[in-house]
Length: 213
Image 1 (cartoon, rainbow, N blue to C red):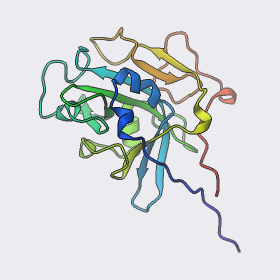
Image 2 (image 1 turned 45 degrees about the vertical axis):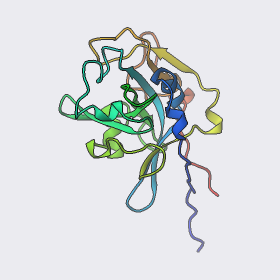
Image 3 (image 1 turned 60 degrees about the vertical axis):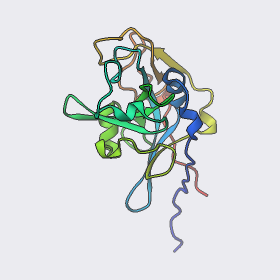
């Protein structure tokens, strides 16, 4: 009997230069990119980013707005690294550092859609971190392929997807700033903008497993 064929997946990482730009530019361009984790058995767990939020040091909602501390030091560091913090003492939130050193700037990964998994398994920062097993130990690690978790580019078929630009959520200051983006056709978004209805399953976008070689 012939052995079953498994999808051959090999995701290149996004380059450092991609992240060396302001968060409000990187944020919408990260939608459609892929979060990838190499698991202990060598297989890859991956999903497509469908929702992001941007933060900057001159923004009162940013962790670096008031001061630099041991907890937020990574956010002030070089771009192209994960910044992972604990929200309300319960949930981990995964960000990527952007722009330049000594300027707190980053993008929160709010939701990811995974192929062949429940559509809302990672629909929110806490659920995303839990599904990928990310925590404070991943803080400051590079996102550019030097360790077992990285960010990979969009697929070629994603280029014409429709993004929604809207306000951020879960914050008390700076809530009116339109620095949140999500994929309109995805059912894996954590929260939709007012008036934007969830697309029917028959019409929604979802990631497909990589083709067999």
